Amino acid sequence: MNLFTLPDIFAIGFFVLCWAVYAITLERTPHGRNSLNARMNIYREVWMRRMLDREVRIIDTQIMGSLQNGTAFFASTSLLAIGGGLTLLRSTDAAMTVLSTLPLGIRSSEALWELKSVGLIVIFVYAFFKFAWAYRLFNYVAILLGATPPSDRKDTPEAQAHVMRTTRLFQSAGRHFNRGQRAFFFALGYLGWFISPWVLFITTLAVVTVIWRRQFDSDSYRAMAK
Image 1: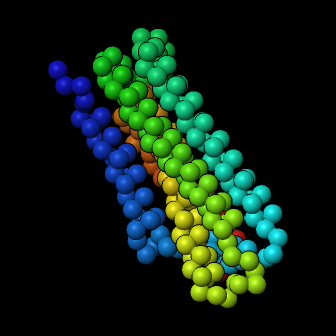
Image 2: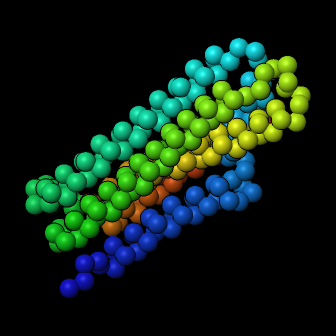
């Protein structure tokens, strides 16, 4: 017996394709270099260069601590979401009973429900690894902040190389954090599959529309215009 119907196959394929195309467009294409994330990367370098001019860098370490705390919060939230997914996996009968009462609900087999639950858990596990690695990278950036040459040596080749090294690591941390958040957004779209494959099409399009607009057509994007 086949677990997937044809609409299920098309819906999950559409979901994966949208995620992949969005990520590649944002991170690997010239169009993505004009996104809000890319513009923030510019200011990461600006921050590191201005930090080099300061003798007292307490404010820089405080901001870095704030970034670390935010990343730790999302990593902890990912673990809670994984726990919720495991609970959903263990409560298949009760969840399917509730789902069958919904107007758009399409009753599926227990095996398919469990497979959907596993897919959701996998997304949150991916998000956890991204947030955990971003947190580690922010720790590394904090170490490099502490190793920054004093301001009276800011024009030396050593200082300039250190700024670029710190900036690249900082940008990498931001990139992994953004990937974790993207996984959260797409996890919301994935929930539509629990109702029906047709709802998954709609929720996936909704998620892509929202996050695309935030990157290329939002007030924050325009505020960061050059």
